[in-house]
Length: 72
Image (cartoon, rainbow, N blue to C red; front, top):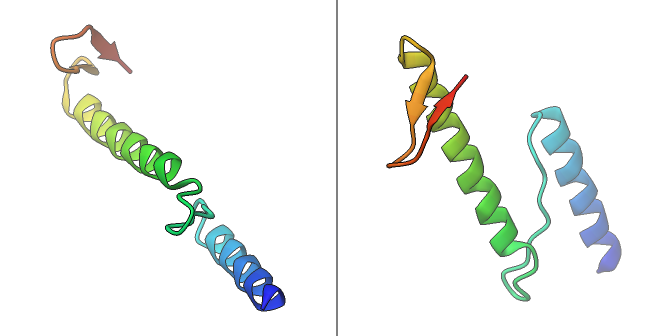
């Protein structure tokens, strides 16, 4: 029922907040927010990878592919 779905979503939001995590409402059936969710996951993974690379480098600079250097 709609009430059960709403309660479940509110529980999921509360749980995500407790974990200090993001909550995303997505639908495999309609495709709603699926692409955006995966873009967000990819962005977070890239960010973490870059932070690790910058922390490892002595000058706090890292290069992404053949592009310009990124400094921290």
